[in-house]
Length: 183
Image 1: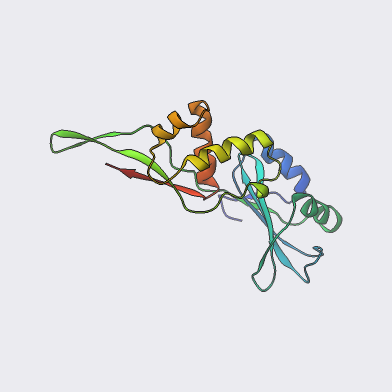
Image 2 (image 1 turned 135 degrees about the vertical axis):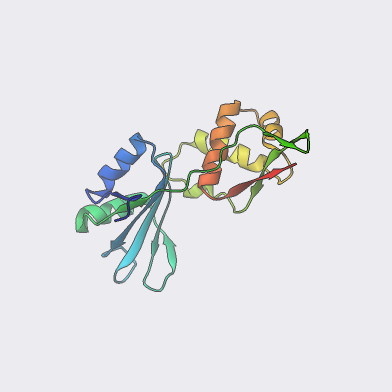
């Protein structure tokens, strides 16, 4: 096990409760067997953002991915496990700090941060999230057009700035947006 991974083989249900309490980010993975509708051994994956399960899937021996719900994974782990679940941390998303002044040739040029969509936000995959959380995340995601700065999005979306910052960090962690810094 690598120094950055965390052994969660004490049971998936228990581990998920701990990760939610401590708001962990990462990808849980384990080799599984006896998964409904999957023959043989397969890899199970559970993505966590701020401790919440955002997506679960199984990768079969041919490399095909199959979405699966969290409860089915918990049931398989309880009946046939516990399996050796390992949590690989997600990279820390870049900060969505306000624009930074960078001195260039005795003058100051301003950089702005512009979020750009790089993948679809699939709200139905965010298991364990409240409808309010999903709506706030969707509101920020829909305001991202590849041209608006973070500050413009904060003026446009009727949510407090700290909620928008948190939504942007979550969207970065989900890998559905990127942030480009431009002059």
